[in-house]
Length: 240
Image 1 (cartoon, rainbow, N blue to C red):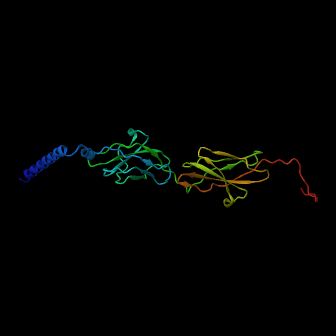
Image 2: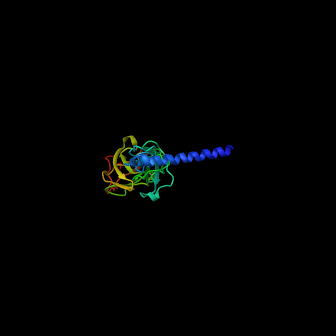
Image 3: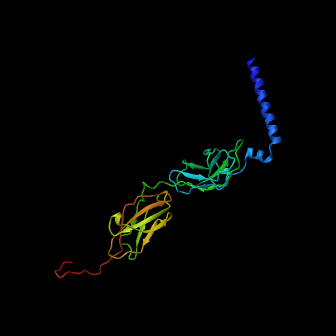
């Protein structure tokens, strides 16, 4: 008897839903029906370009009528490259991707989530998370020492996550006296310092930079110009 009652109740609910749907389709204007299934795409999606070391920040324009959003990470700018499952379902028009691999460029797309189904994909925007350089320093910094008559040549190893390098110089071995000489991009691994004088020893340091962080000073590299004495000079007492 109880099972029969439940069966009748279920049938009644299904019939009621069907009737309500038919009434909705008949009486409700087309524009409101379209709103209920919501297909508009979020606009002005923007992903941060290396400005954070712990996340990629994604923001977009809030859309009236959406009760939430689905954020997707993609390997390129095509919809086909997007991960099948969204990264998250925020209710506000922003999302932080904390699982992004540092220095890997991704594309992000957003869908509105209305009451019935997902909306259309937004246009993509690329973004990436920077490596935190705060505990790192450039390695293997070298300076020519007496090899050239007109320059001191510097070289160093690439530091992953660096967007550029700052080169510092001093005539003492203290970083507190170092003056920034130049900034070079991350593809540059050598630099010629032409602002040098014979007989002076110079000390050089590097720092790695990206949009979100700055490394420590590298170890100092000592450099100087080539010098050659063609004769010796004696003091009046005969000392050389």
